[in-house]
Image 1 (cartoon, rainbow, N blue to C red):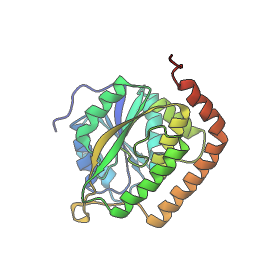
Image 2 (tube, one colour; image 1 turned 180 degrees about the vertical axis):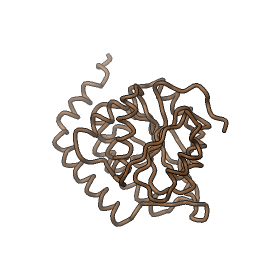
Image 3 (cartoon, rainbow, N blue to C red; image 1 turned 45 degrees about the vertical axis):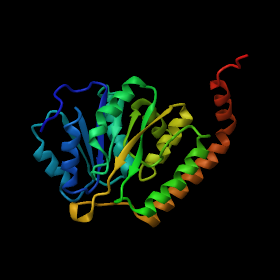
Length: 261
């Protein structure tokens, strides 16, 4: 494996995984070829993928694998990794899915953007190919519209794409203040609350691929359950947005440049 030898002391790749089968090892190998270190949080998987990964890469000092005893949800798995990363002195984490959807080749570029603007969140803006389910492509437009409203047009290019670099301190702070963001609602609520906190988004185009079932592709998205979760999430965010609106407007006015004659 042609992996970078010099580990970063500030930025790491964080991959939450739940029952992603053989795609997990493929994704981790691709990430390790681009970055050091890579951390994986196994979210109570029952398919043996976590154990297989640990055996395969036992000699890789650039990889760390956490095993959670029970499935808690994507956001909870990410938070587990973020807390450990913060304790180890890391300042930023690039999150990516374990199922091969996200472009590992773009990791160095995203990390460089984050190093140039450490106060910002670097957000992948998906570029879909023919493998993308049309229903999901259309559905995310609805979520993006709500996100644009909830953040007063803060400039978030996509609210659901999980290939991102987060400032760890800010994300841990917003997650620890409330009990949400622990499951499929994590990606969207994270960018909304970070925008409310004043963390600016930087959008970078990134191709996304949906692996076919015959290639090992697996999706844990349930249209009924997870759309209901997203609806409840946006309901909460809109209500909180209304309460925050005066403060958000004041912050926006203060950020405007002075009038020039």
